[in-house]
Image (tube, rainbow, N blue to C red; front, side):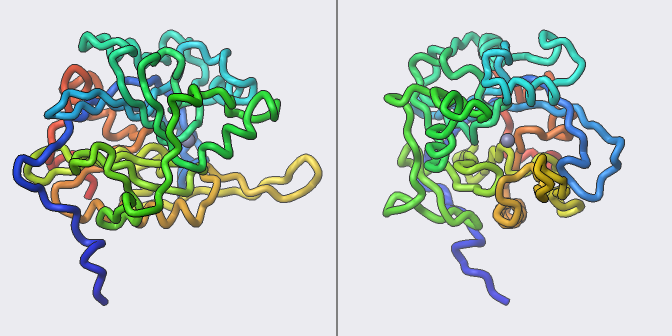
Length: 320
Ligand SMILES: [Zn+2]
């Protein structure tokens, strides 16, 4: 069987190739019951996981972009349904202990929220959106289908976990993955070149929640790539192929069957994970998911966190 050549490689570096530095940011801690996310799983296993955000600095222009904003300091300002969710995932720790919010993480390297010019949100679950109001100079970039979630969000729908005023409309761009600016990037069918110089791509990675996107950063001038993968998977076992996405059928309030899964569209999420597995086979590539407990255990407090940066091509951290 042959695969299309387009699927098997990413664009090679050009002369004076632009690239980006990526720094991890502490966005808070959560507890994940493994059985809610992967199967097979020990029903007793609860993993403490980070909610990672990332600072992306364009190496040539110095422009600062954030990918995700972690958990906000005061979860009670979320819509009630999201605040409930947040309390259950944060668990018994005091919030002060659980939440190292992104503004604090930025300050460790002398940055303020006002220094950020763009923010790309992988999707609008509470543990990724931080407090957008703090970033007064930033333009927000989200996947096109985020619009439908926000338009029908809280308070129009009092039960919605998504606030319809999540980001200021005048500073929010809903990215469409179509038209001539939309390109294939290796195994990913749709991506947009954010700066127009091949240094950073927003990648359509559907399945988890409508509008879910990832960021693909070129992290060196000689061909290294880092995929910041948000919630396309919640556990590395899914990327390694040693577990599958969990879903359980539960009975709804009116006796109806409801499939309970961490992903809004499980078959689509499975296809997205297959694309990531293909990406991981390519040379000089690395993937970090937002709740990557294993990556965090190795790197917590280390040089990969701002004001440090993630070194390209550190093979011991590449998911094989
Ligand atoms: Zn999510």
